[in-house]
Length: 262
Image 1 (tube, rainbow, N blue to C red):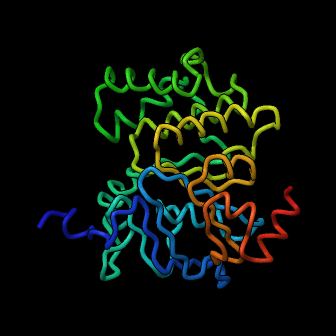
Image 2: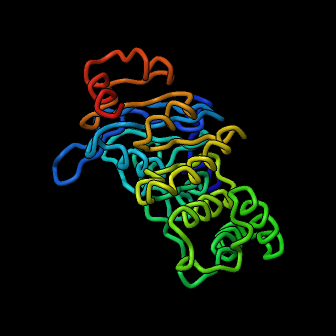
């Protein structure tokens, strides 16, 4: 049996992301507790909650940047991180499954020594094995999509925060992921730059990209989500479609949260 066959098992669902009984602790403090969540292909799920509720940790567990103590995660039908019998995946197998996700961080994480075009092309060349010609052609398309084609030769230190984040989105898309993960994509931006980034993400949702987004932008969450998830002390205490979540929340905790963010 091939390495992929040994180290990856099909999930009992066709969801783009399937999380089962996920728990994660830091310094003996449990920050995620038996989390169960499914994200359907083509859906946008936004994750809301107060600071310290476990939102970013959950997102980072999905692509195994954080390793949970218990539970399982499947990405596009393949388990990530461990095998069904609890053994760690090999580095090669983990990298292959992790490549099914594209991550956009709060802090952009662009390579400062590379211009915009090369920031978008390097991973497809070195990880996906694309030719430079093919990678650059795709990068130009993506930079056009995010409104950054006019900055292809610029370096990150010359860009605004909003421009950096749009390049970061293009870089993640260049890996042709099954699922896009956004960790508070506007939290590091000046208020006047937030709209340009949220606009790009809204366009991606309209194109059918599967996305999981940690955000504090309530209006944005309501506009783009298929499902809204609310985390509190590491637990999912409410999950609903956006209309139900924002107009008729089921729990007093969510009601109070929404009142504070009205």
